[in-house]
Image (cartoon, rainbow, N blue to C red; front, side):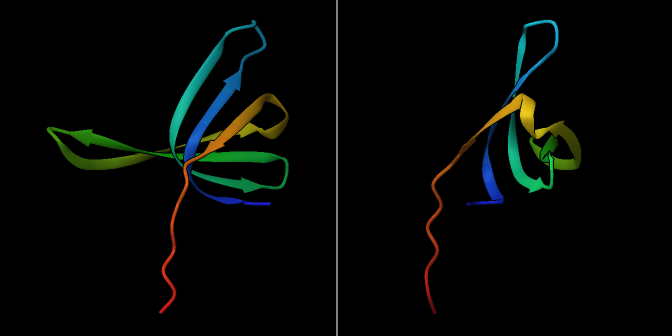
Length: 69
């Protein structure tokens, strides 16, 4: 199973609503860590990490292609 890469995480909140977060996704044990890049005036200005319980979210991976050297 894939544990790290780029994708979108759909987080289901206890009140019944849902939130979508996109960025670098890493699965660590029973948690999912999403790193979002924050852009300021069109330039990367920082990053924000969000920890989400794995049992409350769905991860949609973006396809990635790796070239062998």
